[in-house]
View 1 (spheres, rainbow, N blue to C red):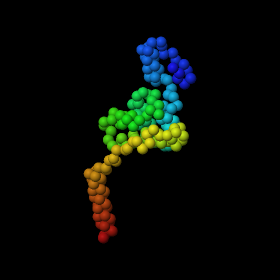
View 2: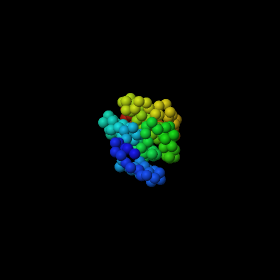
View 3: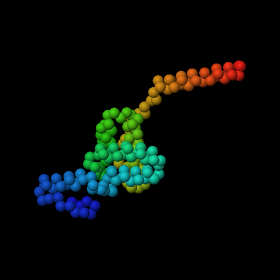
View 4: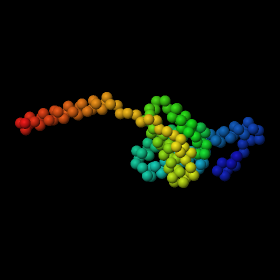
Length: 167
């Protein structure tokens, strides 16, 4: 087997060769190849760090690292990336609401849109395949409480102003 130009002997017997293959592919110190999902995400994060605010970079990094950590195999090639990889990742987070899932999908979609725009990829493997969950609605109860408090303060200020001016 050859990885990045280096030859590895896997063994003569099939079982031994399979064991060695899995060791090599599961070794976290083996750098990812240029056409892996992880490598494209790394390139995007390098770009995001240079071209975005630190908080934006941190936002992308949080979601994208979680996505890469979930991928199996870690060396998954971009050509093999399918919608189900993203769906399974989202399903692994049952506590995430629609808003958080929308953010997560935005991050992943942005990587592959960017990679295609920058010509790191000839096509986006997820193009038009991922639909965001519906946006959540503001908590109207909280908004009405805030409005009532503001209105009470405005009424108080009007009375104080009228009293001070004798109106």
